[in-house]
Amino acid sequence: MPDKKHLILIFKTAVASIDETFGEGYSKKNPQLIVALLSHISGEEKSQRSTHINTGVKNENIGNQPN
Image (cartoon, rainbow, N blue to C red; front, side, top):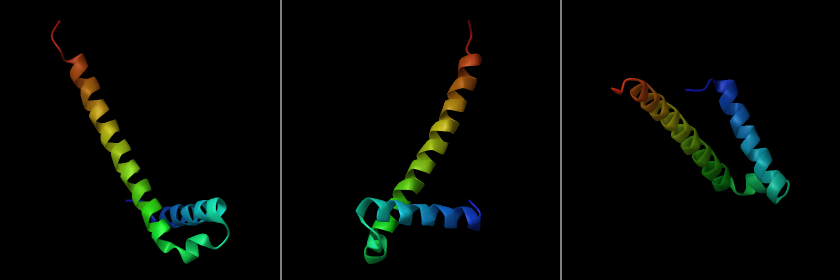
């Protein structure tokens, strides 16, 4: 799990991204967008970790196949 400083950075980045896209203060008026964006980011990170792990397993298996 990321440390507290990393989580705060992710949150602030999400808020800034929403405000940059839709206008200053939009994220504060629409907190559900922050939740949705953070959920999306979290899902992508899990997917990337899973893909990385699965790719590593496949690569190990390729080297162990008989000729």
